[in-house]
Image (cartoon, chains in turn purple, red):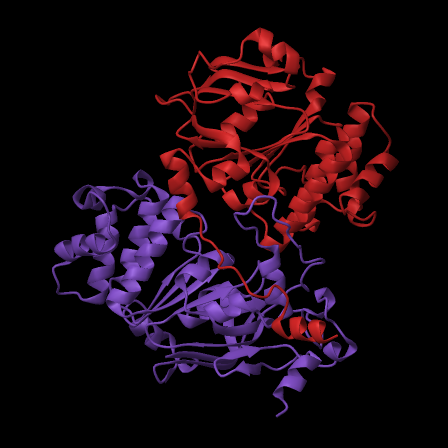
Length: 318
Length: 288
């Protein structure tokens, strides 16, 4: 079980994420969805202990993974965990392979770091088989530039699963890929999650993508989660006005579909109002929304929403 | 029947419009047997493509990386020389149209990266005013008015690209293109780098401007949902060729080409929602 509670993150002393809550059962798949600057990438870096290299730190809250509080981890503990217990596919993963190293060397280097004594060569080939790479022998000898975007993403996934992590965090793993390749990678990730029993945290801005691969959702806006719960339930009947607005702005494959944009723009990172951060763009805004940041209200047994609309109060009353 | 209806697959001489046929409909921009091969490459980026853009129509060009859609867009606006074949504008070859020929302003293009496609040292107002000045079409005030029309306030108009958001920069690019008074606007992935809420703003803005000004719109995109929203005719490209062309709705509902089918099957889809407003709001609205 991965459970994040009241998480706040800062970079160089600037609070960029605060009030993030979500949970996902072991072996589940969580989608973190939000627009540019909503804090989703920072949140996922915090899950794998990679805030330090970018000058960030956890300032509040807890990240509980199978009974361990990751916010207490020292750099040394993180080094032991990363790769073997938790793994990360960063956003620019397509350019994160070393251009001077062959694919085989990448894999063997990682495998040696995880288990110095094993037969890294045959294990490297196994890993590529596992990510359904075509022409494995050829790819092991290839340099990154010789591979297509989809193949490089398969290599990144192979590197990430090399240590059989129980949590894999993937930041926009299919955003730069063509739609047919995206489909293959989504299928691969879903298959690997089931085969290896991993928990998958999948960060994206695309609601349609999460609708197909995730079991749970956390919708982020201006550094906080506005709604979280089961994917199907949220997409079927959103509770938070921002979730509803995102759905309405999403084009479908229906010809001549009307799109409803969200007017205005989010508040600048870290310069949030006292009240609800979506208030200035919300069609249901009332004076009460500006008083304080709404806390996450449990709107269903398994579902939370950060909105104080009066309708909530009425429903909560017995 | 418009000549563009003849523009089916590639290399099909029997179906290519003859000069006589085209004279009746006279599309403003038209590509015939257009082939582009980049230097150092053995395979053509575009392979014998025929496409004519009719007055006021909205055409989508969809395909994946390397399908040739951007090359086709650039060739239509005269930014890419054909290796063989012809692209004409008002019946003239692009190569014969001088840089200062007013025909140039009638076909305009906007690009994927709105910040990079604007001059970083010029304010939005200067960028648009320059176009009005060059073509002697208006004053600085006209530029400010046009910027306001696309949603850039007089205050934001004094800012440079780096001080504006991606969506605002795309609005400035649109204003710059419209300042030319184009008959055809080619947009290459105009919303791909934008968030979905901003994408909706930009697509709606283009819809409104088309209704007001009546220019033809060529939308190049990898995203079939965007094509579905914004166009009525659709060209599907694969490895430099047009594999399917026809009314957007027909292609989406019943694609005939196997690649188009694969593309459509790959598009992630949102399940239909039972409520598109917050669920508490739908109950209170009903009650009220």
